[in-house]
Image 1 (tube, rainbow, N blue to C red):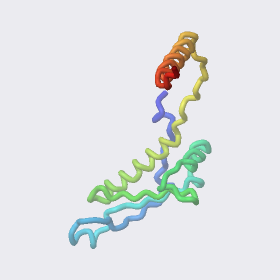
Image 2: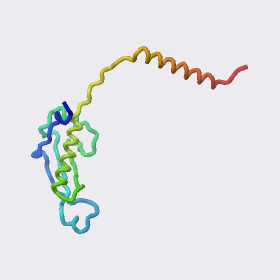
Image 3: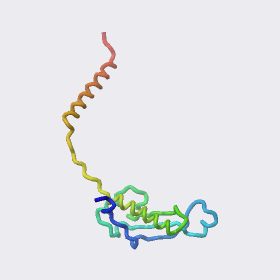
Image 4: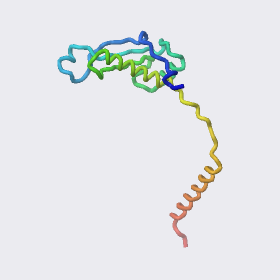
Length: 137
């Protein structure tokens, strides 16, 4: 089963959308039209599973405030709708990252051959260092 199949979807009714003016070059149009989107997603009040909420809050990401609100600003495109889709996709990618649980490492022991190689390498390294010493006559 893939990670994408297990990752919960973010519900759009839990996202607060705000149309804002984009930054940067754009001529006169940028001063008149609000094409950028800022979304706010409250982690605590969402319908995400508890384990995903915990991992999301534990992420070290500047987009997540101390109060547990994800704020994403999207202004890559000239259209409000495309910026909205981009912001939702970025939020979903963040949730997917938090939903992914790495497999637990199974501790193993080194083989006898690996232990022997390690000891041989230590002895060889010691001999190299011994050659660097001053010869006392």
